[in-house]
Amino acid sequence: MKNRADIAVAGLAVMGENLVLNMESKGFTVAVYNRTNARTEAFAGGRGKGRNILPASTVEELCDSLERPRRIMLMVKAGPPVDELIGKLLPHLEPGDIIIDGGNSFFKDTMRRAAELQKKEILFVGAGVSGGEEGALHGPSLMPGGDIRAWEHIRDIFRAISAKAPDGTPCCDWVGPDGSGHFVKMLHNGIEYSDMQMISEAWELLRRLCRFTPETLAALFENWNRGELESYLIEITSEILRRKDPETGAYVLDLILDSAGQKGTGKWTAECALDLGMPAATIAEAVFARCLSALREERLRAAEILPGPPVPKAQDETAFAESVRQALYAAKICAYAQGFQLLRAASQEFNWNLNYGDIALMWRGGCIIRAKFLDDIKRAFSADGNLANLMLDPFFAGALAKAQESLRKVVAAAAMSGIAVPAFSSALAYYDASRSKRLPANLIQAMRDCFGAHTYERIDRPRGEFFHTDWTGSGNVSATSTNYNR
Ligand code: NBP
Image (cartoon, rainbow, N blue to C red; front, side, top):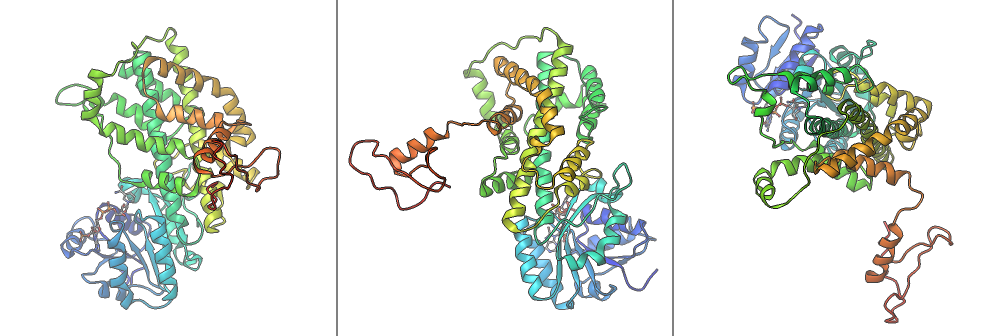
């Protein structure tokens, strides 16, 4: 074993431990530290035993055990623990050393830390790590961003441990400056929320309108996984549908309470969309859908009071199932279009100069939203790096032209049957609003001007000129001095 380690991992909960084992299996010597030393000892004497792992009981010992420049990857709970640990490490570091935060930190915290550490000449990297504990052990998707000078020192380790796409390309590339790596990871999770919600809505429609059995449904999803919807989430859906509880013999899915949890990255994505004024409505709907599902007691009470229509059986189940498949594909394109629109807005707002196609490639392996579909997104952005909206790429525009009718049919059938499909509905509304030459927003502007003298622009005058009408005849023709038009 080498005297000095190639890299350190601080934080030995499930993600940290698995990343260490992954790094070690690729030939790197890894120094390890955990705030509670008993965990370090348990790991070194357990899963880490007999491997090229150097346990450290203090941060000082950890820093001493590393090659220079030091590379220290933090795998601790996001938030104050990251600041606390960085504070403990700093006295033992030298200019040029590298701290990588591999946790799910909020990208604005990463931007703050990057700026603070830059003053101390420490190279800070915020790396999104996706794929859960399995990914950490066998190959995660890695999305590092921050001080570009760190990349040459961590590239080989990161690419070695990352997942590989079906063509062998590592699912890891440099994302961009300061908080961009963590932003991209957050966005990945937001998209994951919408993917999961839309798949669940598709399943609900097939179950209730086609009355398919779990076995038929599982076979259907398996079949879908051979086409344009091919993805990890569709694959696990068919496996989940088949799984039976060994004790009761019932399908496990039927035993699971319909109240969805969340850890907050979907909410962050929706908040960022609001902050940047971007219509990522389907991602936000997926977050709200989980919130509504969690209000189970209220739903049960309302179910006794609020009426809805009877749920009819689809007349041609095979045809309806195909419409649901196409609707899912169309809605997925709309949700990803929203995600990339948000990414573009963030890139412009923070001057990150992101490469959207390369980001799509990083998600092809290891992570939860891995899908064949991402290759088409890469192709779209390679053809036009300034593509304003994914839906306008010729391939996706063509796919939407084919599938939009199915999305309408399915949303209409759901509405007439009283089945809530918030993500499908919101994707359709996004599609239709995005292609509308004229929206009813002129009435909104008129109302705002009427009650608040907020002014409006006119279609027969240049943009940037603002007008006010004396709607009530009160003689007040002066507009508010604050420009509320944005
Ligand atoms: P947790 O998020 O459960 O964090 C536990 C770790 O944080 C332990 O090592 C704990 O040390 C350490 N820690 C805490 Br809590 N407060 C600390 C402090 N003030 N100073 C130093 N260490 C502190 O672990 P995880 O599930 O392995 O996730 C690690 C990171 O990776 C998180 O940011 C998570 O969001 C992210 N992530 C997780 C997944 C996943 O699937 N779990 C996937 C992708 C990313 P202790 O043992 O002394 O309490």
